[in-house]
Amino acid sequence: MNVHRARKIDYWIGVPLCFALTALRRLGKALGLGRYGPAASPQNLLFIELSEMGSAVIAAPMLRKAAERYPQANLHFLVFEEIADSVRILGIIPDANVITIRSKSAWSVIWTGLWAVRALRQRGIDTAIDLELFSRVTAILGYLSGARRRVGFDRFHSEGCYRGNLLTHRVAYNPHQHIALNFFALLFALDAPADEVPMLKRALPLELARPVRLAVSEERKRAIRQKLQALNPSFSATRQLVLLNPVGGDLLPLRRWPLRNYCELAQRLLANPDLQLGITGTAKEKPAAQAICEHVEDPRCLDLTGQTTFRELMDLYSIAGLLITNDSGPAHFTGLTDIKAIVLYGPETPRLYGSLSPSVVCVTTGFACSPCVSAINHRHSPCADNRCLQQLSVDAVHQLALDLLAGKS
Image (tube, rainbow, N blue to C red; front, side, top):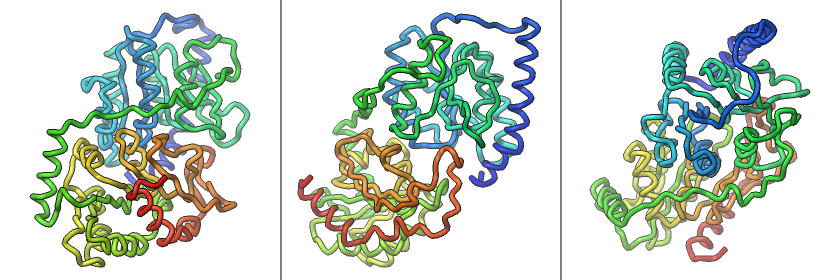
């Protein structure tokens, strides 16, 4: 579903529903209906993060901590079907407990969303943690799940982020600390005093967000090399593999580095006979990969768009020497492996969303208008000319790539 349509649905349908459910909640409380007061330790704990593929990876350290903190609890995750593999691959949430909603259209969201609510209530969800930033739809889903305890980000006195009063544990979103730590604030709020306003009144060291690593066996590495050889006989295991990810999804096209820059960068990298390139992305991102391949006209440039599963993409990262991408899901997937990466930022800031892997270098121009997308504006920027990214030169990125490939910090 188109991101602009999703925003409209979240606003025009979400706001009235949040208002109505809040009124019903207050009426029920006044009449003494429902369950209030202290709740037992979580037994069936639900995490909600529908739309951002990279967010599941960022949240992985928090999910790991939740499993340690509540070993008796069954962990569940509600996510859009199209990106559910980013949750499953972590190995923290059992596959059977990953509940999905199809996002192909507004109708599919509604019907499969109702099915998901039914499934959640059947599972006896008692605690729901909403990881989304001020989404009305996820606030509604958390409320309808039947969870007695509902944790999420609350606007408090901020304007324009209304999502009703459906939370039992209201956490202050901190735009000055990494989103991974904001996720930890949600988890730790479960054990905070009930009268603590706003939550969470404690320090959160960055060490908490140590990336979760994915184990990749030698067998899987051999298998992905064989697949690359089958796709393109020019692939050689003796050359260093550099991956380019020129699109990175259509959620925020404003985050893309110009395609012409990727074309020029590819040509410069291939001037080194010891390098080979792989262009990654989904099947619908193939036109960008084809444009790069046609520009360089070199058999060492492999079009891998639509050719790998999510699991195979992680295997690919484990054998590659470097990934170059704009801010996108793949930028966050780097945290699952040891791959070196260059991530180009413009409309968003690495201070909040940058990979916490020590092998990743985040590059930004630091424009005065950047970041222009945030939780407060629901990632809707007035910008139509992302000069913050355009001014990241090919020269600079190419030199940084050579330094990283040579083992320089």
